[in-house]
Length: 190
Image 1: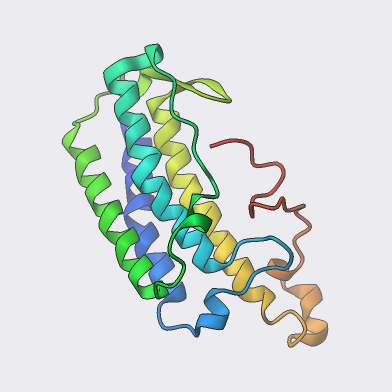
Image 2: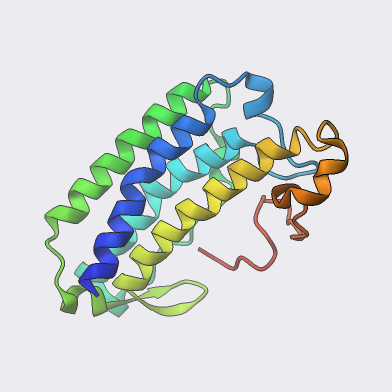
């Protein structure tokens, strides 16, 4: 189990840098473009990642360690970033994501988690009993999900320009049914 934690930490360490490399310096119209309809832009995704860092992942880890199953996690507002100040440049959001992620990973390292700690459980408001190991794993895969989403949103901006090559470009041929909050309908609650 410690190997999985180590691997998850490596993914979490790389998330902000990967997102930064993908988005920093791009024109605002690219960063704010969507896949159409009510789907999220790359700007929205970064705001969502920040909100998760502040209100979701580490706070839930602390609830598991301090309260176990006696306290249910607070529900996570997946749309909170849409209510924030949307005038900040993407670079400021990227810097904030890196900053809060570093703080959270330092705090997580400072917990010196044992195998027993990783097996401890808490109560998710929609999904019931979850382990700390599952929470940390979901945190890492959440990053990968949104990195993939950013790639897809950016690629979408070239959908017509690629001409007949679209048939060979998998990122442009996804058939995921998107809900209004940018998630695939198969995603489930965080």
